[in-house]
Each structure stands twice: as C-alpha cells, then as structure tokens.
Image (tube, rainbow over all chains, first blue to last red):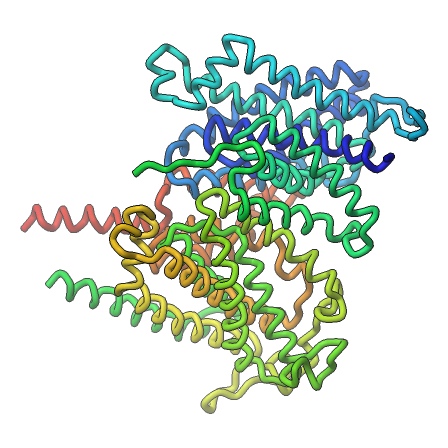
Length: 290
Length: 347
C-alpha cells in the first residue's frame, strides 16, 4: 500500500510531464524531445534562487513557473515556428537540437555536479488508516494534481481556453473567426514549460538535481502519454498514475525487473500500446484523408 | 539523352569518390586516417538509414540499437563469451577473423530489423520515432542485464586477439603492409563503397520507386499496387543490415564493445547526420558522416568549458534546419538546378 502511494506520487510527476507533451502535441503536432531538459532547466532556476540568492521556497517556486512560461512561449516563437508545418523529421531534429543545447547550457551555467534540493514538505511520515505515507509523497500528489486541475479549468471554462482549443483543432477556421492562432500556440508551449517546471521541482528532492535528471522521467512520461492517448489530456494524467504505480510495484515485487529493467519495462508499455491500441486508452483513432 | 546522363553522372561521381578515398591516406596523418575510417563507418550506417528515412519516409531514432546488434555479433564471433568460451556459442562463436564477421553481423541485424519492421508497419511518423527511440533507450540496459551472454557492463575485449585483427601486428593485404589505422580506413571504405553501389542499384529501379511512393503517399502507393507491408519491412531490414555492418566495423575499430559503445546519443546523432546530409540522396550520407565525426570536435574548439560544446552543437543543428531544410545535398541540388537553368538561358 505504501508502494502504491509513492507510486501515485511519481505518477503525478509523470502525469504532469506527459500532459505537457500532450499539450504540445495537440497544439503543434510535435513531440517535444526537449521537454525533460526544459523541466530540468526550470528546476535549476529555482535551485539557484533558493540556494544562491537566499529566497524562500514558495516565492522561488512561483517566479520559476512564470519564467518557465515565458521561456516556453519564447522558444516556440523563436525556434519552433520557423519549422512548423514542414516535414515531421525537421521538427524532430529541431527539438533534439534544443535538447542537446539546453543540456549543455545547464552544465555550462551550473556545472554538472549533483545537487541536493530542499523539499517544501516536512520530511517525516504520517499514518493514515494504518498505512505509513511520507509528506513528500502526499505533497507531490496534491501539487501535481491541482496544477492539472487548474489547467483543466482554464481550458474548459475560460475564453482563452476555448480559443486555445480552437487554435489546436482547426487553425485555419480559428483564424477566420479572429483567434490569434500563433499567440495561442505560444501560450500552449508556455503552459507546457510551466507543467514541466512543476514536474521537475516536485521530482528534484527525491531524484537529486543534475543535468540529466529528467531524462528517465521523460521516457516514463512518453509511456504515460502513449498509454493514455497522445491527444488526450485526461489520458496523459491517468496514464501517468498507472505507469507510476505499476512501475513501483513491478520494481518492488518482481525480482527480475528490479531497478535496472524499469526503463525497458516502460518502453515495452509504449511498444505494446502502440501495437495493440495506437490511439491509447482515451484517444480517438486518427483518420487520414487523401 | 536525359536518362543516359542520369546514369553517367552518378558513375562519374562514384569513380571520383573512389579515387579520393584511395589516395587520401597519403596526404593525412595516421590519426586523421583513423578519423576518416570512422567517417566511412558512419557513412555505411547513414546510407542504410537514408534508405529507410530518406527514401521510404520512416523515421528511426533507434539505429544505434541495430549497430549494437552488429557490434556484439562481431565481438561474440571473434572472442566468444564468458559462458561459452572460445569454443563458442552454437559452435561458431570465437576465433573467427574480423572481416568474416562483418557479413554475418549485417545479416543478424538485418533479420532483427526485418522482424522489427513487422510491428512497425502499424506505426507512422512521430509514433514510429517514439517506438524506435524506446528501443534505443532500452538497448544499453538490456545488454547490461544479460550479463553471462554479453559480458554485462564490462563488455567484450577484442584487443588481445592479434591473429584475428590488425590491432597489434600490421595487416598484409596484396603485398602492402598496413598499420591498424590504415587497415581500418581501407576496410571501412571498401565496405562503404561496395554497399554504396548496392544501395544505388537497389534504389534506382522498381524497388526504389516503390520506396518513394510509400514515402510520398501511403494511400496512393497502395492504390497503385505497391505492397506497404512488403516494402516497409524490406526497407527496415536493409537499413538495419547496413547499421549492423557499421556496428561490426565500429567494434573492430574500437577493439572493444560494452553497453556504452552504443549509447542513445549515437542513435540521435545518426538521425541528425542523415537529415543534415540531406534525405533521399546518395551524397548526403557522406556529408552527414563527416558532420557526425567532426562536428563535436569543431564544437570543442569553439569553447572548452564544460557544457559549451554541446550548446554549440545543438545550436548548429537547429540553425542548419532553418537554413538548409533539405540538408546539404538539397543545397547542391538547388545550386545545380540554378546552374542548368542559367545554362539553358545562355544557350
């Protein structure tokens, strides 16, 4: 049971990052291979603010999210927009270039040393109905799910959310009715960067901060997004939780898998889902017209 | 006239290329010869990837895995492994001379690629990129885990086998004595040029047309009677076989394989290389291979502080995608087109 709760906590992190991938995929039809590096970069900003500049945790958290949002939007405007709408492979290469550049930039600015990141939550445990759970896990679940909830409210109940959905579903017609499609796509990238920042900040206390921190998390999030359906925001979050709990149980109770083969296990999930049900649990099948 | 020029131009280009390859070692240092040997090895992998990504339109971020299959096949055939010893696996492992392992490595990787091509039929575009990426990421962990077969994290050493390769004593080929670097260089480029011709023959006829039809529109290809299943799996098999040969040569060149010989970065660089060189052209792979081999070194010359070369590399990749959307060979083609238009006007 304790494993399930800590699985849910990592699942919340995977879900947030998976949702970021889904947002970008829906908005621009791109899979952002640099999503993990963007999240790591954001986490370093927060670490730098708290450790080097003496900020307390929550102000640093908020500032990091704002910076990440602006950074994500700026990245879209500067490097994604010029290759959008062209061949898929060009966009893939550009996000891979971004991955390499950001990873190098992190090492350049903050060095490759492994850093400990303080946790905003108490480090002790508590007991709910006989199950021992850590505050860290509870806090992670609450923060990640409420971020996702806020985004859902934004998309479903605000005019901005409606415009963003319109821009993603049908850019041409959205433009006709006066939606500023490009700005909407930039906001989409900004929100994705923000979600990544949340995931990175939540993951940092247990994973420790180094330039490759989010690479494994990104793979798990790919698995989560594919499992839930790469076009379905709900699916991404549910997929994240399933992957989180599933891998935790698998790693604990199946000796053969242990901690070494957790990554291949997640990849097996990707392959199996893509083969059996390419649209994922919650996605709609893709229809192609000629 | 036009069809004749389409045959003559590639042949002339090929002869020129062969001549350059033959004489190059006389003008460069030993160390450079080794670097150019790696260019040859990457060229082989990129020709294969180009068949798949450039001509058939299937993105693969997992070709490092097929190189790993080739590399490990060669290593096992030459050195055997801890469990089966020199007497070898199934009676064939261990004690085989390096060059004879190359075709076997290609065959094994080709079969693996063909088998992977079957499930990959159901995937296209980004989904395929993800699935192949998954394989590339999983490969090092899987190799580490089957320790008794692959030597686990410590890998398999090929250096101390002077009878099987030229790593210690020089090789004698047709009366010439070649040191290890020159041996690698000529071996890699002989294989590369041979496979270049094979790819050219494969792509210029019916099969190549079918590949391009699949790339341009799967639906249209099917309705013209092109079997998607047949040509996609064929493309996967061929391209994996090329990667396997490259992996085999890579193992011979490094005289050592371990899980980190074939990291995820290798798969990524291969795709970057094939796109930078230019998709769907036979010149592209060489440009791409030069890029893969020398770009990291150039990036290090720009700045040596930790992390900075990676920034330079990433930024250069992004900028190249902006200014050369069709890669280096696309640029050449456009230049050629402009030149011939100018020529027509003058005439």
